[in-house]
Image (cartoon, rainbow, N blue to C red; front, side, top):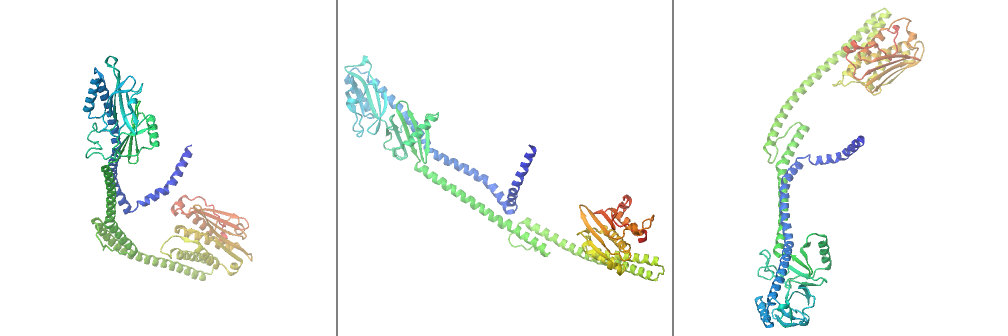
Length: 609
């Protein structure tokens, strides 16, 4: 489970690393970092301004909702007050002692109420009207009902109903039996149910008053239980709300816990409330012209803030580019020019900050000192190269002189054994001279490339034997792309020279033909050298019981010097295998800690020298 989590984490890291790298690339320049700092400074202020502007916008948007809720609340209060006032008035009139007194009281009540009632009547036992006081001049469009059908038996004491497309409030009060004179049984008061702004506070003025709400800002409907609708504010504008709106309001009211339901649709706000046993009231409020202008001004303010913010950011970016990025780019170009041409041009056009000028001055001083130091080092390096070339040339000449002296001495020596020893020493000196030439002819001591040196070495070793041997024995070589370190070059070359010379001189006696192969390979941190021939074998050329000759002793010594292993195999010839690390140990450590060598090289018998 832990392995699965680790694998998932690694996969997630590999998936996210390119994206993280791309994001890091975007913040890798001065321009992007300046833009980040500027945005980080401006965005909090812009966010605070946006929050304040949004609060103002929400307040303006909700003003119509608050207004509709306040109007509905005042309308319910007005309905309750009108019904209570009419009931109290009728109870007082019902205490009169005769019909004439009741009629006078009805006239007095109509006059005192400023003819608010379209009908005040005394109802007899049959439901007809005995006495009636109406106000047709004030309500020419109001029809309070047929005189013979004003009151039905069992009618509610307080009732809102719709007739002829208008809403009416009808209050009926039954006269007590002890107060009945003649046939009166009840009193009725009917008034149009219209919204009046008398009870509203100053924040919601009357739509009909001077300076108040416009006629199209508010619309009120009474909805009867049977679904019939009538405007409560006839002077207010507005169309009849669609049935879908009423269904949604009823659904919201059934699902909500509050008694009043508010809903916004566009710029209109609707508030809905049911009157128990009477029906419902719906108030539609629209945004006032002042509120619409405030919204447009708010939108204009938002646009202006955005434009000013964008202009400010653009100005800061342009100024940053002009005052910071361009001088920095000029300074970068001057540094790149110094890298390419070696000369630093500090004459940069345009305004440059003090810090950049100080940096340019310091860099100019540093480049001047560096240039002088480089010239001094170039002179010293040239002098050192000349000295090293002279030294290598003298060493090579000295080795050649030593080889020539050995040749002269060998030619003057009558003894064959002495002459052979001197010539063998001469060959070894010539090998060292050739190695010195190839190893130190360049300026850098990177190592000895065996791909180039091994053919030359084998060719020189072939020229050191008689012509008949050179014709009978074929030389094969494979350098394997090996480059030998300078401190191991001399021992390895001397090992190859000793082994190949002994194979050419002793492995193919008489007219015997064959081959000698030298191969190098690299395996891990070790280098492997194999020198093999298909001659008569080392055992056939070495007398029984004799020790190692000088050549074999030299080979073993060189192997110990490079910290290698020496092993000899004899099967259809002689095969010598030498292995050593790529970075051989120093001669001192190898001399003191070297184990007995197990080398792969043809043991050179004592007769081979």
